[in-house]
Image 1: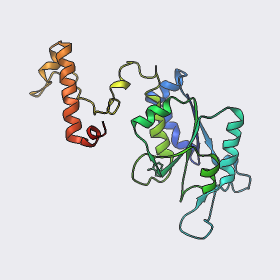
Image 2: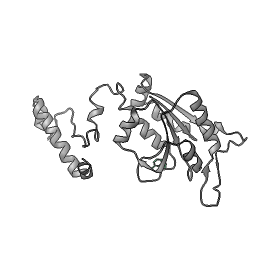
Image 3: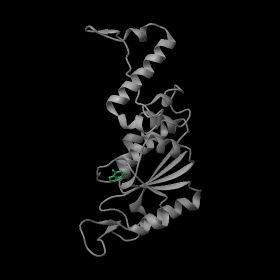
Length: 226
Ligand code: ADE
């Protein structure tokens, strides 16, 4: 899978993309990540990428021209399956959406900023707007990082243990069961006996029971969705 990210702040991505699972996915050549500085597609000497809104109002609006140039350059190089705009008024990102997006080959994530992007960008280029939650971030960069991370971990081969991503919370519509590691006894706080029993059947029954319990307590809405 290849993800191209259009942003005014490409430096924000270096730490996140250069570590942990994302780095591993890129090193293993299972994922290609490219950031593009929208400002480098501007033509004026001040590299202006935003301007005042027509009709007045607070805040600046990201201009269509540099965004259009960047998208058109990328589209001339390869086909894209979808172009997503990171925006607080988009459809809410969740595991189902992550699974769906991870099936695509080439996608573009456009990071909005300031008051938003010129509406014509949406009309001309955007497949779908995506929000990572009902709150407003300073820009779409963090949203693009969240989405990239969620996609990377479910690409087959990225996570060493092939069952690990499948047992994530939400993958089966339930939250994950609690997990423990050594020591088996920490100051009298013991790991549940069943996990030390070596009985695989009992362990999987316990895990499912815990998943149901956790989901019922913390996210009953997930149970109602099924
Ligand atoms: N840009 C600003 N807020 C956002 C959000 N909640 N999700 C995605 N992009 C955003």
